[in-house]
Length: 365
Image (cartoon, rainbow, N blue to C red; front, top):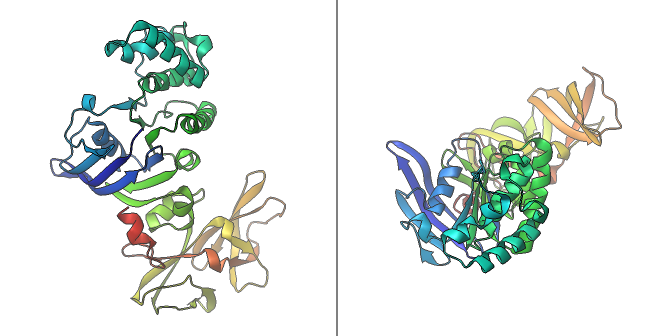
């Protein structure tokens, strides 16, 4: 397997900029998820790494070699598509072995490698079955087998679980991560589903309008979002925002919300007067009857082990993740307490996080 390094990558389609100034590195054996909504540039980025699209500018290095303008066939990569693209007239064995047959690999070696791959994917019992009659999960395993059998330098996957139902998708998320752990394959995986990315990836690149908003581990992206976009995109429910207008001095300890003092995260720079937002995850809000921050219960969503309680405050709707034991009445007045050690601070105009240097590091990966 090999390292993938992307440097200042850009792709224009006429006047439309699909990807701009993207830089990141996928270490040898690492699993990277390109995460974002439709049209954010993640698939275009993947196709440029694969050689299916050529960049307008920038460079792509595979195993130290500049492959920016090499054809896909010269890059030694394997691509798994959302649509399985299997050959319906062939059985499972022939589908998996077809890439090797095309390369002129001896039949005995094809047989051995197909059976080795089938064992890895636990589909040895269906090798001689027709692919047309297989369930979606098995068809996806066959598509993965056809990629794995080639033993390429890296795997590129474009929403490979997108057509599966929820139950199969959950199973395949687990199996894909287990497979990655067994073969230590350098993998770039495109998805719009944050749960897939958070469950499988070593690193995540969150994309928006062709720009990488943040690059980091799932823990970094969830706990220290580099922008309001990332904070809002990651998490279910997403981060709450409390907006206020003020200037903030370096090292300031708190801010007043309609007479209620709320602690600020550590600020490393003076901030000119303007609209700011405090961000807090739902699990970092607790109910405290003595708290000066008050609101009325708007609704509650029971989730079994916990519940999401929506509270209408003078600064908007806040959602808190709390134990399922407590019962709330609609309209009930409650006190809210925010965990001051878990707050984020953002500039609303730029959307960027301002409480640390993380934004700069993440943005330019």
